[in-house]
Image 1: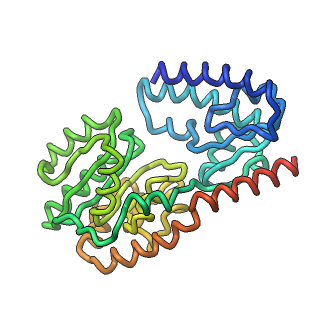
Image 2: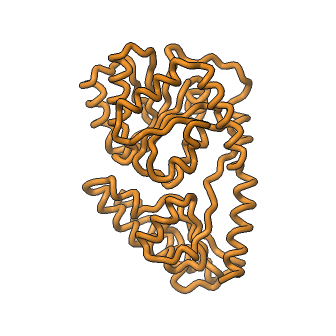
Image 3: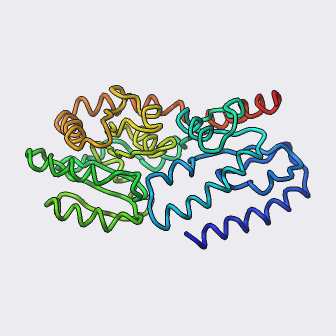
Length: 313
């Protein structure tokens, strides 16, 4: 991560000088990118914040927290120098205001998007059989804020209660070894697989074959993986925290619980794992809901809202 941070700063310095030599209607920087261009812009600068780094680092520790703190300082410069700031959720908007000290009037809301057509093409024909026993899929970068320790404790409760399931954990990160050890200590070997980073084709297949998607994050600025679950007509179990309730409609496309309650998490998972009809109904509701996040619709919303905000500056 240190080299990544340095490379990103150098990238910003090089790109900023090039952008100032060419005419543009406006320039968009994502997250901290664009902080240097915003120092002396020749066209209106828009900061599109996908994840509020100052909020993400609160759940981290050690070197990761230190480096995220450095990146948050640059993101603060980016949003303060921007004419307009784009946030992906009301939660993220409020954290930007709180952490970076800018007016909420400067911020417009545009959600994340998903390429529905691409997912449909990759998924192919319907009718793929679910895994047996039913699988719970989790896709996450394994940082503390993803809260997978609580998920593993919920799995131990399901195993204790005799609920048939298997857990698929996709992703890597600094907490993977810790959570693998916890899984072993909870007696989950043979029930839970840590799959690491997998090829796109295999990821699509896991989405097709899993029965439930679960990610009990403590912090999400939006939660793009929830859109991936919805486009694959999967019911969701997640934490009632951060921006998650804005993306996952509780009781409609998924079930939300307190992020610190493994018993409640296990209970909601058991409800879905043992009720195929409820899974189907929630999955279909999610598939309808995800239409609002289609790439073309969100792109049009982005252009409309940013143009209106710039015109009102």
